[in-house]
Image (cartoon, rainbow, N blue to C red; front, side, top):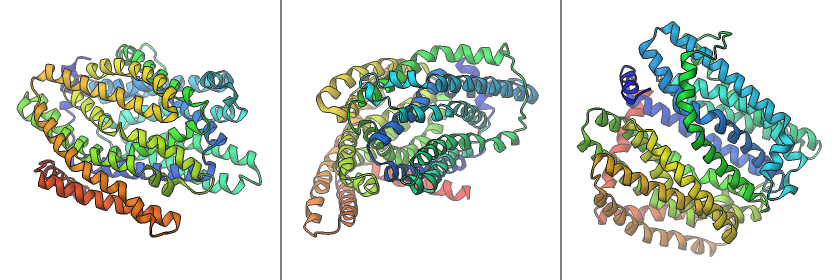
Length: 539
């Protein structure tokens, strides 16, 4: 499909209210991330950070890798434009037949992948643990066998999500992970914890089955919304259907990029295996690292993306560049102090939220060290994701793929270099360096594509933000030593340290930002008012 064709198709499917959709998506995202955070806490409480947790987390990431490698990247990138084109050019009946046929084929492919993974689980696990074969335990193989069944339901959920998003139905797909999280939480607290000592085999089976069933429910809860679109199951498997050929033609070139990305994930978890508690510490730290982006930056990106698309379609690149600049500056305004807070208070954050049950102080120490390293990647991670959306607003999906095709191999090189020097904590730094390269490349190519983008203005604003953040970070660093003199109980002390550092850092950062004339303060205020208005309108 050509860019013009896609633009024409989406033009006919404008949402009735961008603000309303934004509010609903943001609410769903908050609940999704919130329940995901609780799930992480529950898992840490139940399985701690040791051999069981390492086997669980390593086995849990492998089905995701296989799915993304074979069908995930293709579905996420091409199913929406293909379906939108059918909705625009074909009859309703043809569109429904097409998506039903495509769903059947993709589900069958998912079943085949699940079956393959189930049968060859020992070999796949041995490949993942090639740097430390002793980690290929029967428990990890058992976990992976059960988790391999998730692949077919990942495929089904991806098709449902693409179908609903194509029809501007965003809320249910974004809320579906909530049900996944709740099922896992119930399985862990209701089955694993009560039986972990009296009947450990049953408890482990319940943990594995509950984790797998979460994905099943995530797919199934979307079915009523799909049926409301008039789409009905049909026993058709037309592999020669034009839409199937179109999906294959558009998606196959992306397999190379998907392969590179998943090879990187494979290498990361392979490198982690020789480190005791390494896979679990990395997985938990990654979950915390992504929270500031999910809570704050997603709202900014969601708010500016429709505006950027509108300006790009009307060729109003003056307004496009102004909006881009605001988005970048607002993102850095939030992520710079957030990164300082996460890096400085990592030990307190992990200790307060995870240190209970089977998760002790040793787990806190290693996970906090990894989270501190992840803090260095927060700004580049946020900008990278925002700039990727900027390219999409220009109907350019190739440039992000090309940049990723270079930055991911670069990260792989950094992975081997830094893990040898710093251990597990080196992997997030490798990620930070690779993302920084990618962001610089994104800005460079974007400038060549649309002309000067106000880089000096953005860099000047970031300079002021850094000047305001450094004293705030210094104050946050001193808070734990002040609180320790109070000799409070450990958990209360950690809570006071986090709350005190957050409050003091926020006041100093905000005060200095106003003193330095950081204009993003006003922009954030306006954005929050706009978001609150959109939220109220959606109720």
